[in-house]
Length: 438
Image (cartoon, rainbow, N blue to C red; front, side, top):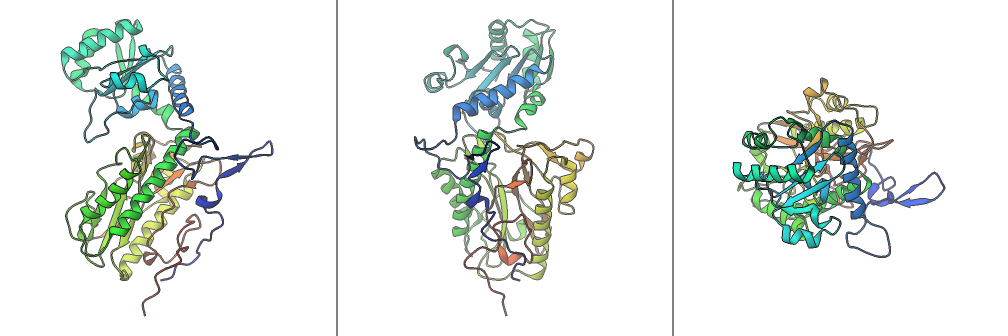
């Protein structure tokens, strides 16, 4: 059970991918694997450039349409346009921070935190930060819509794109804009958001590193007799200590019978020696999300032959999908590459929302999305059988102009592998590995 085709240190992105050679004959540092503090001795993430780049992409996407204005209700979309940070979960709330973006480039942030946002967001003018849009009731929504109408000089017959709303909000807005045409504004923003800027990619890589720390803490806690929720608490605590704003979902530590059928949350079940354990977690760095998954055997025991076969099948599907994530391919090509280890959905894009297009499912056959450079994709195949165990694995990939960049390099459980994919730069490099049982 010793892995074959083991990779070595060279080509490991954690070690060698800090510089790229530019056409003019000099090296340029990429924003990978750098510290997070503000320093004067090297260029790290430029957050002013991050905000400008996102806003410029959104303005350009809107300018390509005949929509007069976007009404933004999603927290992640408000952050994309302005840098506004508010509550993240545990449920959707449409009035913590809203943005109206006009096609001529004017925009206003409406926030419940007016007193703190004005002094702390100097990249916006004072008039661009206004009080809360109270869209929780009809009267508040009408009052806000009237103020927007006056602020942006919108006619009653304008065309408005909205990224998220309710039937009640629709009724209230039509009171103020009776002849307006309302369209899906989220589709407009997605055209901007689906391709990431270099600063966005740096934030996403940082979120993956933050999540790695959570994984180390989870594995340190994973011993026979510990509860699933205790393992999750260790991961959550480690990520929060590093400044994680929230977590990618409720996070998942599923063990034993909860892995097949796969139950995607964490319980108080006591994990026993030899149990299969799925860990799917993700921290949040400046609004961008880590999100990857590994499956382990708890304790100092070998897995069964059937467990190895299922894990290897899932592992092969994962890296086959990663290898297909290239310019010129589509989401459907990737979906096919991961067969047969796809449940309902193979994966998704990621950014300020942990679940963004493109999506990878059977529907991709009829809704094919060409892959483009600087898309960020998450693939998460699954293989399992009740009584044996379930195996979920997930990698995050950046589409490049060549080989896909797999930036989630956290090791797999080598006891569950018999062969290593050429794109796996980590497995087989541990100084202490499990020896075959005689």
